[in-house]
Structures are given as C-alpha cells and as structure tokens.
Image (cartoon, rainbow, N blue to C red; front, side, top):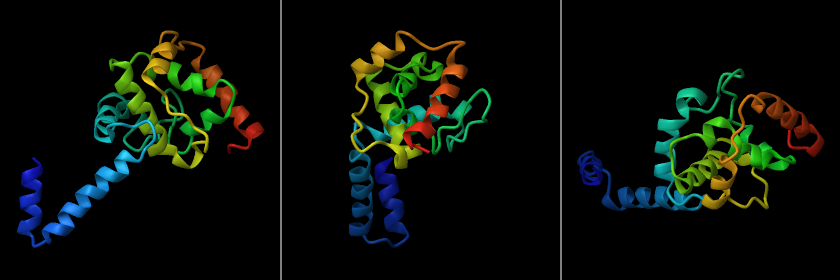
Length: 158
C-alpha cells in the first residue's frame, strides 16, 4: 500500500523528498500525542467502534450519544470525570483489549478536544482502563454526565 501511494505521488510529479518528508511529518505528529502509541490504530478503532454512534466528527446527537468534540477532555477537570470516561458504556464494554482501549481514549481526547486537555494530564494506561471498565455505568450514566457537565462551570473548564 505504501509503495502504491509513493508511486502515485511520484507519477504526478511530486519530488521524492517532499513525499518522504510529508510521510515523516505525519508519523512524527502521531507519535507526539501523549499516551498514544499507535495513532493509526486508534483512528481505525474509533471508526469501527465509536463513530457509528458519536459520528465521524464526534458531534454525537445530544441525546443518547453525547457529543465528544469540544467537550470530552473537560471531564478531566472535574472530580469524578476521569473515572467517568473509563466507565461510560461505550468505553467499558467495547470489545478491545485494555491497551488498545487506552490508546483509543487518549487519542480521542486529543483528537476531539485538545484545547481542554489539562496541562498536567497523565494519559490513561491499560491498567487504569482495565480497572475502570470492570464497573461500567449503566442507567446512572445520563444523570452522572449531567452532574459532571454542570461542574464544568465551577472549575472554569467551559
């Protein structure tokens, strides 16, 4: 696949140095996301496991599948919010191993709400995700989310 893309780029006249530099820049920017060891895998996991409900742009539907775009990292700034992210049904019950799920959650925070990721954010680890998802939220999810969102104003994370 990579060779086909390189051949196509060269066929349209792009200098090989430019093509290689662009590929390196993508890999460098992906590697720079804290807690994300494989951004391509995270993006694929999002597409396969999350975007069906939360939509490709993470806009959700403001009802049963809340938006994540511009919101999800705000939970990190309120008491109980970090645990909430790891316990929501879509995270806690997804059929991914803990390490890939931690990769996906960290990627999602930066991809859809980088502006609200706290400066002192410590990325989720596989062990933390494993612990949190053992106690998934069910019926209480909506009420807990509403309480946490109300707390955004108290912490200045609006």
